Image 1: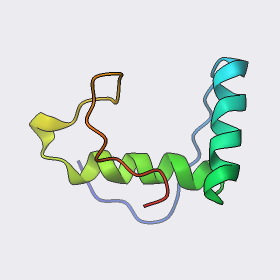
Image 2: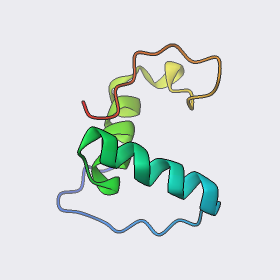
Image 3: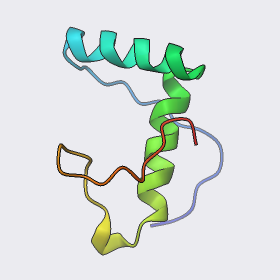
Length: 67
């Protein structure tokens, strides 16, 4: 996969209750919703490819939303 520079848009649809929870979480951390998503994707990018698992209830807490 080629490295690309610049930015791309991501339009996603999520359940309203998750959106509200995420919006409040971002406000609590003083970051934008975009920053929160970018931080999560950077967290995944930093993992070895074989260890890139989505966060769930059994995930260790090494991810920091406002990293």
